[in-house]
Length: 350
Image 1 (cartoon, rainbow, N blue to C red):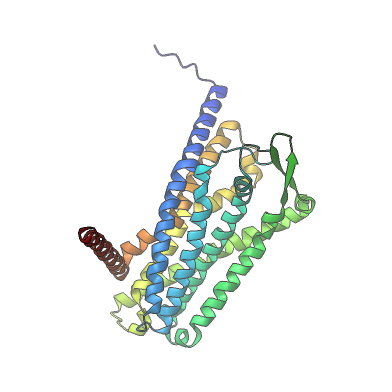
Image 2 (cartoon, rainbow, N blue to C red):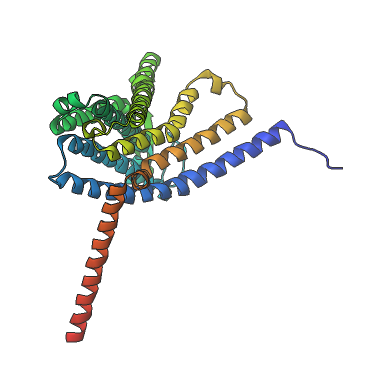
């Protein structure tokens, strides 16, 4: 007969061990690998969308949509660039001296969080703007042709980026780096900025970040996407084939795909982040808390997939995008073959 010798303490220890193993594997290997792919994919997105923007055959609405996709690709690319170096860093607790890390690595390890929040917030609101623009184009096509302009789109996207920077500034200034000469080495530490420790300030800041970083964008995305899908299905069911109403359906499908993937892959991490700030989690026992932390790691992994895999999404839903990728690869292959032939001929002549 098998005897069950497990105890609550043993279960907690096992769960914590599983969490640490999963955390190290995901944050040090899997997520940086995904972000490495994201750097390549978002770079290709920039090249292809920039090429589309250079074409004179695009109308004003399609140009404006392409500008939005370029801005989103830049934000996603920067997110992946910030996360990728984590694979090469040693993990150590925040707020203690670290003598083994270089100066650059130390600064990176403490400013990585605010940078991730910055580009997460920027990408979130860029997706909101792209979705709103597509909603106006499909549901209000006549008004869209009068309202939507490329310069306005660029100005609004720039304003959103500046507002995101403003909202995240407290994350950057909440502590300062302290450098101490320890004789044989230089040790680094951090000291938290006093006003940031104020309970009232933290409460107000968390409330603002929750509203503008989570709830308001989610409401906009859900409302616009549901209305957009309903309108597209209604037009299709009624046999409406007005180009002005559909207005580049391939871009509309891309936007719908972006929003759906965002809601599936990014929303869980947002929800868990809000739960982490409540007493519901802080009052849990050790095993439940470890499971919650495991859920956070998995949610962050899903979030990284969203920022890194838009290239695959574009390829899946947009035939023209796939053709551009194929043409780009073909030209690159022909150029490489031509350079190889030239080098071979030079060797023969020598």
